[in-house]
Amino acid sequence: MWDYTDKVLELFYDPKNQGAIEETGEAGVKVATGEVGSIACGDALRLHLKVEEATDKILDARFQTFGCTSAIASSSALTEMIKGLTLDEALGVTNKEIADYLGGLPEAKMHCSVMGQEALEAAIYNYRGIPLEAHDDEEGVLICSCFGITDAKIKKAVAQNNLFSAEQVTNYVKAGGGCGSCLTKIDDIIREVKQEAANKNLHSYKAKAKAEIPSSEQKRPLTTVQKVALIQKVLDEEVRPVLIADGGDVELYDVEGDKIQVILKGACGSCSSSTATLKIAIEARLRDRISKEITVEAV
Ligand code: FES
Image (tube, rainbow, N blue to C red; front, side, top):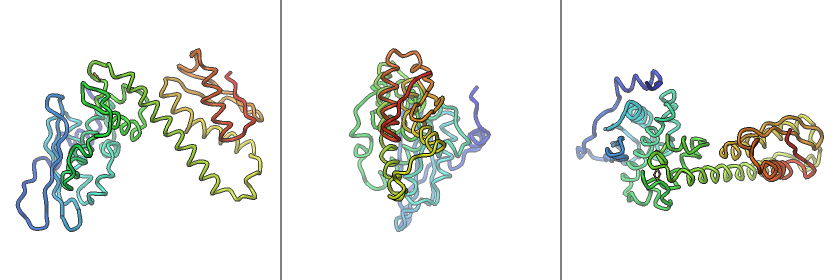
């Protein structure tokens, strides 16, 4: 038995905006549809939008779905969320926001929220006359042939939902849920996304720090409290996501001057290359961010 929230059950038993929107020829109004999924895969969703042409505002939204409790509730939630928005505003709606509207979804059902967001994108692109292949991950490389999922789609799901494992990716976009031969590639993509995010954090932190600290203060040494807080921040934002994606983790144990002690956990603790992890993933990052004198050891 799935553990559904009250909101999911409410929208399943009493769905909002179910059905189609017919084109009536009304002046200044256009109807667009977006369709995703396939009945063969178990889920399909068709989303209808009624748009005021002068303002790009969504006047009405309805859905038809062949899917489970979560698919019906997610589609219902999506239509409620986007009514009254402009198309550009609606494009900003993420699958996470759909799930949040429902008070959460079981992780194995998160693909229903992804399906809603994809149907919305498809409808808006159709309205704008942009061919499907121009927005359907056309630049991506096919990773999962069982479900026709590209690396672009997997990267988007990982980044938007902060996913850490191939199993989670399967729950969100189905990739990996068939023969399983693509699971290693999915692991590689997760690592790549985490590394990119860590590098981005590093660059934005440096730019922010430079902008915020008056030049006269830039050389003032950090207090111990500031240093510990900064080390923890670097570990949390730039090191741990990469390690967790690899099945490991790290915890700050102690700081004494420039000597930092950490506890390697999970796969990192038993890994034969844990010294490299310490030196490359942790020590080099902390030296780059805080002080060239820093040394890191595991306890
Ligand atoms: S290729 Fe991805 S599950 Fe088969």
